[in-house]
Image 1 (cartoon, helix red, strand yellow):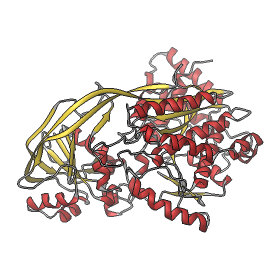
Image 2 (image 1 turned 180 degrees about the vertical axis):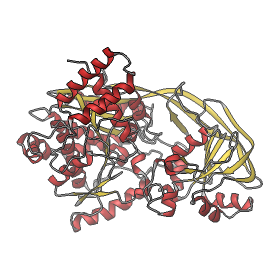
Image 3 (image 1 turned 120 degrees about the horizontal axis):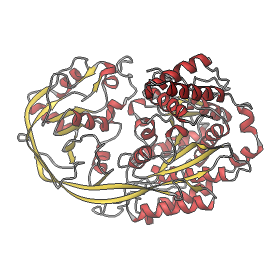
Image 4 (image 1 turned 30 degrees about the horizontal axis):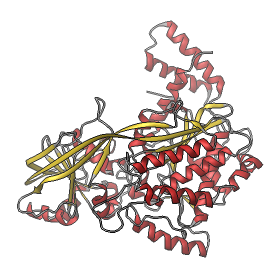
Length: 604
């Protein structure tokens, strides 16, 4: 299928070259045939009229003023300078206080968070973003799984949470494995576009698959294998469990290694035990395995040794194209008991309507939840989540305050989304993507704020998923306004782009940015802050010590909020429709979405 390229890549000043009207007509005409068949002349005439209307609109157009003029106007500069560290601190202190008890989804702290953001948006004069409500109900299924019969494989001794974890997404009181065959399937990837299929020639139906984390490109460092050192979605644990279920496996084990996973075992231990939240399954939901497990590296080595194999040697084989799955000659038995609670959280949605194109939206998003509390601990029990992500929630409130103080509203609407249950698998943003409060084709772009920069001012801007979308062209302009340049994220192998809320909408085709901080401190003072706070951030990710502190690099936080403000402001003042760059995994989705939307517009 051929689609009109609505958004050709732009240069720094956004002087856009339009495709010829002929190519526009060709692409949309082909789309019209593909959508409706167009076997009748009346259908073709209607499509022709719509195409004529579309071509007259000049969808891709340059900004009438230079971008520099847009950011230099006094109205914008006043609110840009007015981004307030004291206001930001106040929000973070409250949202990460012990009173909020870690903001676990469906908890009292979660409800208090929604009330706090709603009250703040109302005070700023923003309109409800979900009809007449600021809240979008997100139904959640809480599953509390415990291992009721410990895992047995040969005579290996397992200790739940210390060297393995197990839970289920099934709404069943008991999920049991009995002597389930163990099959090592390498990276557990089936990727036809890369000519890779770890399941080739093996039937895993009813069996338990054992998989490596990340993907072969990372493991080998070869730039032409997958995307080299940059993680693809095939390397994410979410994909691996999904693919195992599609292949008919009864259970799945992912082998944890800190470097390729990009986080230590403590993240698995804290994040995969206790209550887990899911969106309720329906007829459109994909399959899931009965039991999902992680093994630490020590038990993995013991497992392979018991099978008469050397784990390091088998892992090396799994990196090579043509790898064949291996039956380990062992079986696993385990029983997982679960209790259930149907509950709910809320996305918080607020909009500042645009002055001319109110149906077109720039979205700022930040998740509002964290990990709650662990009452089994002595002493401190609360995961306050000050950096992750009270800082992002506070950030959207401060940016909302800036927009509300503009004397002249931008032509497009600005919508703020506080997403629920991100820590449970980006559930709130997934729900929003499936049930958007505006057509997805009317979202110009999304800026996600997950743990804003607190490590001091930087000379550059670190971009997660660098090179994915034309939103970077806008970001580049906003960064230049701060005398900063764009740089790829320091660790593309960690796949951060696939690990936060913007990804839920990216999978639908909506371009999204996940940026912040940088790699080069502005000066020696900021370098000291970067070293000191950076070590703390790494140490305290998803730990009890992620708490508010006055010694954060607040000037860096302010500068990044100003960057987000400027980026959204350029989009809100203009008429551009940024796309994904050619060759990225989401480009076809956006082309399809936008072309279909144009044909769906009423003829005039």
